[in-house]
Image 1: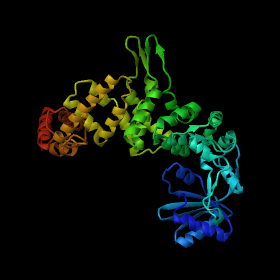
Image 2: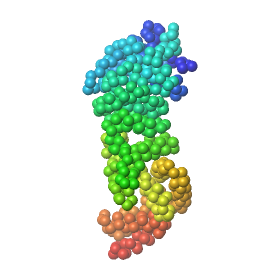
Image 3: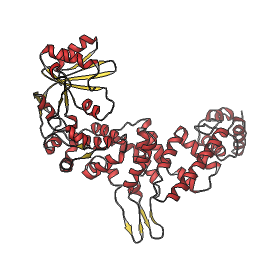
Image 4: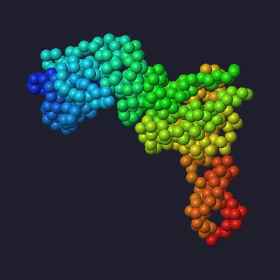
Length: 464
């Protein structure tokens, strides 16, 4: 039953007592038919939504958050959020997505909604409880897996251009198709996205990145012209250049394959962003060698340097999440290079040291980065990755390299030899660190201290 939760009967009784019509509308209705969980309920009242919310709050003994400027109120009870709003119609000015609002009918309210699948409503009043009100045939669009606007799509998207991003996001999340005229209207109105705040765009982008098959969303962003406007660095990955018999792969398509591969393995938003950005510097590092063809030398280094600016531009967080993505972009070639060469203990130790606790995420990204259509090549890489993983496990158990700090500190060197901070201390520490990573000495204090003493003697330092 769609309205089996007791809270709906409470709202029904209170609405009848106040003499107003009330309806559940939008995502809760849509998600019921899609068999998706939903705890956020939107109730439209033909009258005062705030008055009905306050009555429900009193009956439940629940807190009511009132936003009089917007004519809305929120009631939280039993793990459920119910937002009440008065039915309204909206009009927009060309330079803002903030509407002029006035009271309206239920159909006015449904007409202002973004897509037909979000414009369906259930009646909550006693005489029509549970009846579906669907003036724009959203149910048919649900059955046909179609994203379509209730009204003229040019007006819908020009009024609130964020709806273009939402169309793409719903298509990616639900695996739906954007209806032809709706799609063309997004292409016609793409430039309007410039009036939308970066924070709002970032929210939709993150939902696309977290969708079951994120490539659907990014392909639609590219086809509609939105990607070039909101994320030009990714747009520039697209295309193939040929010279003679040499051609490189389309790095946009490759990136989407890697992203989908990661999405099958992990739901982590920031690991998925690392997949989006792992080859972001390839257009800037592309070079042609007549003998070997196209190269992208150093794209991992430049790409890692680009990450902070891209996060800043997209209004993504400039914190440990950004540093995680930056690290994975910088290191993403290392396991691949290891798997192509002789897997030495020294190289694996260095990888463990640099990746630290992010080593599993890095290995997931690298395995996802193998997108060759040649099965034998993929199997060879995966077998070699498994060898790298076994080496890492053995060395980690033996040498405890992950996140290690050299046993000899700068403070110990200064205290032992009575010197202040200087370049020589850094040089001694670096030699000790490399000796441990290269397996020349074990990762313990006694061995590191002995090497420190030998190096200090060579530099003419004497213990106090």
